[in-house]
Image 1 (cartoon, one colour):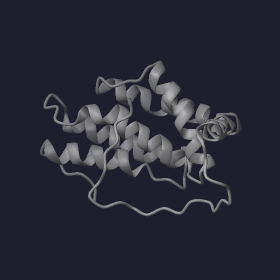
Image 2 (cartoon, helix red, strand yellow):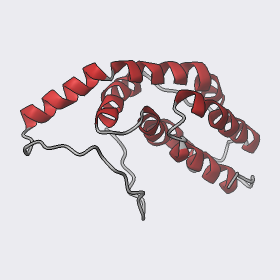
Image 3 (tube, one colour):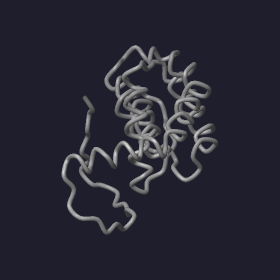
Image 4 (cartoon, rainbow, N blue to C red):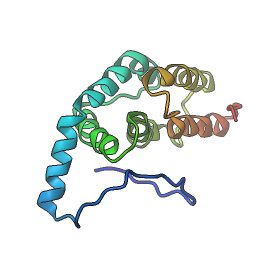
Length: 154
């Protein structure tokens, strides 16, 4: 399962122009498989980044991930990259929709801890992907900080 949130307004994106015929399921599955092979390193780099930079901060918030999340990342991130996106875009989306979304509406959170996680994410993100700011995750953290009475960065 993958939670999809449809915002009221969206940010347009440009994809790489392709000149391929309409896709049937076997061809689409082949393209997904090719993307997984071609961009496997980027997915592994994303998992290493999460483990090295965010695992401790997220565990302080009682958040984590398991094998299912890692499998989804290994499938999703390569397809985003093959379609012209950046690894950071894919990781940010999965982090916001699969891990950080569990913070929404919780009242047993410390504003200071949320701010610490936000600063840590902000500082370390550019080391992973300087072309993608991790904005979905940061926005989610900012929303929760404000909801709990803190002041989030604008």
